Length: 132
Image (cartoon, rainbow, N blue to C red; front, side, top):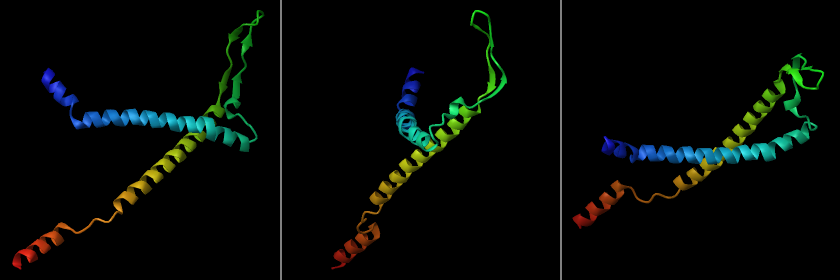
C-alpha cells in the first residue's frame, strides 16, 4: 500500500497540480496586491475619494446602554462592501486578462519561429541521394 501511494504521489499529474496550485497562489497574491495597492486608489481618485465600503442602509440603529456599551448592534445592509467587491472583481479580471494576453503573445512568437524542412522533405532528399 505504501508503494502504491508513493507511485501515486510521484506521478507527473500530482506534481504538476502542486506546482500549479503554488504558482496560482503566488500570482493571486501579486494580482490582489496590484488591485488593492494600485488600482483601487486610482479608482478612488476618479470617484472623488468615495469609500464605498461605508455605504449602507440601516434597518435598526444600534442600541447603546447608559454605560456607553453597545446593547444591540446595528443591523444594516452593507451594499457598499458589495460594490467594492464588484469593482475588485472587475479589476482582477482585467489584470488577469492582460497577463493572459501577454502570455499568448509570447507563446505565438515562439511558435512562429521557422520550422525547417519537414520529415517528408528530408526523406525525399535521402531517397534522391540514394538513387544517385
